Image (cartoon, rainbow, N blue to C red; front, side):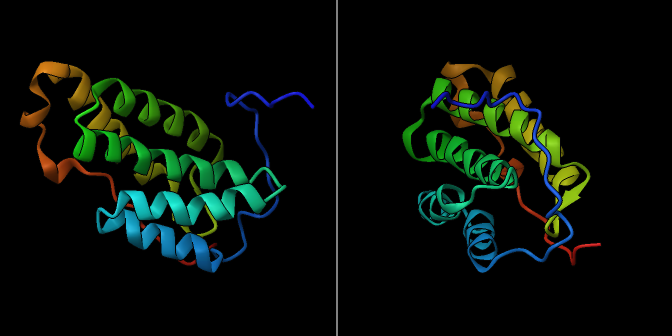
Length: 141
């Protein structure tokens, strides 16, 4: 079985559905800064899903993993790489999917990514903690 490229394209007919309970839980964990816990929660959801919506879940998961690398491990390369991959996945689900305001998440994750790159690995401690990305959850349209 060949591995699918994380560059897409991805397409799902399930963006109109409400977010599954595990997605809600993972989002709440990410928004509280519980990055390791959100990884564990969203990994269960992502691995069990066969539809391309799984890449929405994986994209959110990777934004949280990037923040974990940044805040808990001071791992510049890991943080940048995970944020970039998460952003690459999320772009296929714009503007929103399953209630997730994907555009807003992309904007906030790109903001922290760009600030991180501008600071470089030697100045990680200077990153403004208020830049941490948050997921806005709305009722699906």
